[in-house]
Length: 85
Image (cartoon, rainbow, N blue to C red; front, side, top):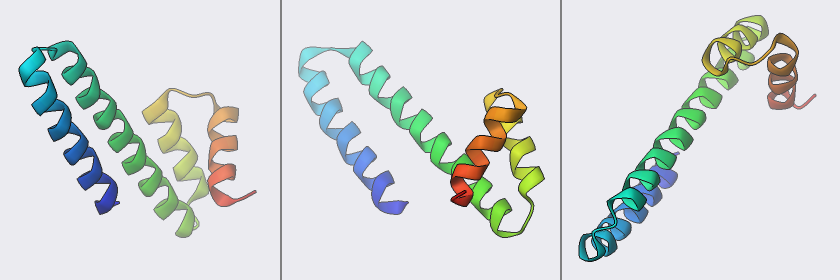
């Protein structure tokens, strides 16, 4: 996880440098928003995996539904995919 975070930070830095000369702030904002969404998704997956490892599958399904707004079936299928089923 740390390597991906460093990668995003470096990519964001590179884009910041290129945007500073072009004043393309919309593109810069989009990259930071994308990195934030990916980071939040990774954090949720990590939390869900920890619940699964603790045999708290139902709690993982509930958390996924709460955070994503997915249906019960979609959340169950997602958790099953994380479990390797």
